Length: 485
Ligand code: ADP
Ligand code: ZN
Ligand code: MG
Image 1 (tube, rainbow, N blue to C red):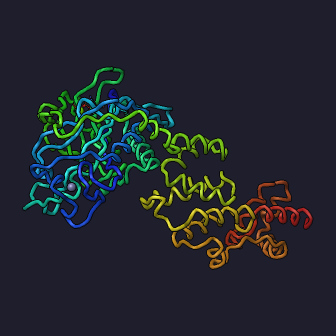
Image 2 (cartoon, helix red, strand yellow):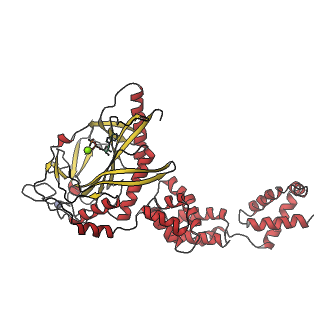
Image 3 (tube, rainbow, N blue to C red):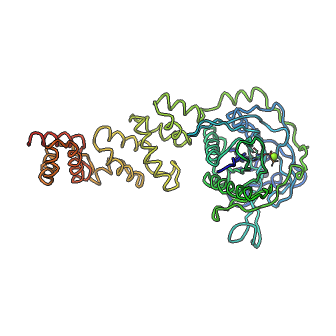
């Protein structure tokens, strides 16, 4: 990136997994008939009063503790005033200068080494409704009219703000993956970036490498996947760098990531806190989480990714790299442990997951939860390799078919006639044939060129479509060549 370094801070919103909304008893689940999940409170009708959802507070404390934040003994809600059709009250109940939790951190590791991202704050607020712009692009520009769905209005939302401690798009992506991973372990949110239950805005600026000052930042919105986050930041770095290299100045503004065009475009100039006329929410009492509740939540925290990673190294003897990959999401770790529980060598299972399985997922942009092969099917397949029923090479073909079809390894092996040939007599015939067809290699071998034997093994493997047991072929060939001389 030449003489510049990127400075990145993220603002994440996660919808909390509660049954009812933040301040009323409406159903908080995703989707449904538009505006069916609404009531006078979440529609902002006059004369109604909000009542705080206790479960939302518990879930927020759960995440805040997992991020090692301090929970405020007393916090309050503020009204954030602005006008937008998706917000019927014309203000959002949020938190401002007295948030629920502050000063946490998340430790991460990349090949270049470990790094820590400070968590500035974790606070509670409510989600807005959803505006559907009726136009081809779905964006407001050029739309004929817009429709409002308030089912989402008032759904409990957690906002997490990081310190500007992130330096690269890779780090930003890893942070988001790990945060999602943690939230999945805690079961506090659905974490579906495509459905919008997990959203991320990125603030980014550049500064000359070595400088300690912060440059003017832009805020990027509308990234609904890890990949989008990475690409948007990558793009924004080049955009800002080009302006700076040409002596221009970065304008502080909010920009919109357009995944199709692979660019960010200006959305609006930056709004400031004073634009929102924040003032304490008069309809809610201050929130003072009791010590006992906090300790109860702390005691109930499940194993988190960092602990699971450590346990994977110790319990299964896995290298660091394996432990990281296998705990990169809850479902990945669960899949691994379910497979290993059936008895195969953990490192072998890990190798299949990091190799073939990951390649399969990456190529198709799939999640492990979407594949057809079950953990127990993978375990069986690995055991068949361990028992010598199929060779490691054949196993790749078998596994691919398992992933495609969801069939058991044994079924695939039977259908395709892939069992490893370890029968000496059956192999002897193929070996004799191979020797007869390759007099030159046989000659080479007899003149002391030991390597000629690998070529002959290869020929036998080819004739048997990879089904011959290679060690045995090697042995038999050597015996034949030495004795047959
Ligand atoms: P704002 O006044 O725009 O709300 P904040 O100081 O509240 O800015 O920070 C919002 C987010 O932007 C945080 O995640 C923070 O880490 C990040 N941030 C702040 N300053 C910068 C900067 N100069 N470059 C990149 N990110 C920044
Ligand atoms: Zn309601
Ligand atoms: Mg701010």
